[in-house]
Length: 221
Image (cartoon, rainbow, N blue to C red; front, side, top):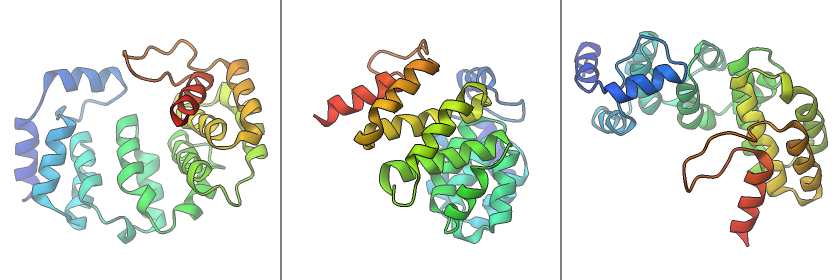
């Protein structure tokens, strides 16, 4: 498919409800508002196409960029290219898809994680804390949990909203996966109160760290 054909299809799949939701959650106007399921269906038809993915990303259209994350080849991106992509994102959902489908699969993600953990750019820091959260849960070797808790306690209250979200995830993962530090993680969550009153749908778990931690522990039995 050509860029023109893809854009024609994206436009035909525009959904008013998605448009409204995306704008409400911080998206700019360069988008059609396509449902996630429709984007995934398109990606399956296009299949892996890194060059086309880069072209779609370069358009700046949110739907095209979401689609691009599904057809790119992560290892083909240089660290400089990926760093630039991360910093260019202004919409949380796009940041999350870029993380899930590209960043997590990049061979140099650890090098980038360490760089982003020291960044003042909100989206770079968001990605750094996302990668750190994953390390805390699955590959904690070499991670200084105590130092992370010190940073979380000090930095979370004034962090940008984009970054605060993944910092909170790291805090929860510490409490869930590291019994030695669980009490302190819970105490930090209670002290800071971040997301304490966050609205959640019925059946969903609150992002408030103490509730999140205790709910996951309950499920583990």
